[in-house]
Picture 1 (spheres, rainbow, N blue to C red):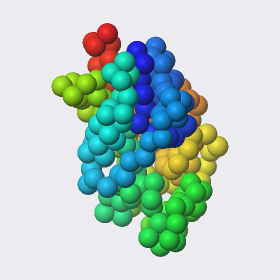
Picture 2 (picture 1 turned 60 degrees about the horizontal axis):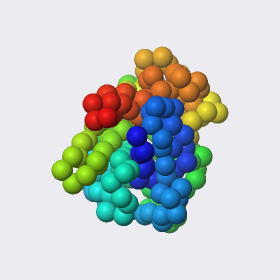
Picture 3 (picture 1 turned 90 degrees about the horizontal axis):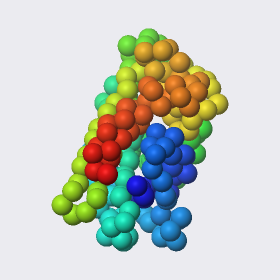
Length: 201
């Protein structure tokens, strides 16, 4: 199945290529399409659905549209950064931060909190799949953890170096690809997605 990812994020494409290895994953740029979507909805699912439906209108039905909106929710930040995960710190610095800068900003904001309980967090992955206007599906999964006291690990991207998966007491960035696919929010959601896609073939 040809799956067009409603994203310009090469890291996400690479993850989905592993997670959905029996399908072919494309980015809009692979098809010569310039795609941008303002993620201003109040929930991950609504953002994912909006992106998928927006891209669906631009391409033929031979492609299944897949959209992912994921984010980090920290209890001590009242669930933030949440849907503003990629824009965290922007209101303070006046610009989009690089991943390392966002992680440093997060660690600084939590520096007064010492225990795992105080630093509890979870990752959310919301997927939207649009086959056509009449077949639209959403999936949401999460993984529990907490924010580390410092960055650790060199794999992954985004907040992976500062998010410790409670089940195995290692950061996402310390996991092999296989381990990350097993434990991560995106891995869990993608297993449900693979079952859904299998039923559509």
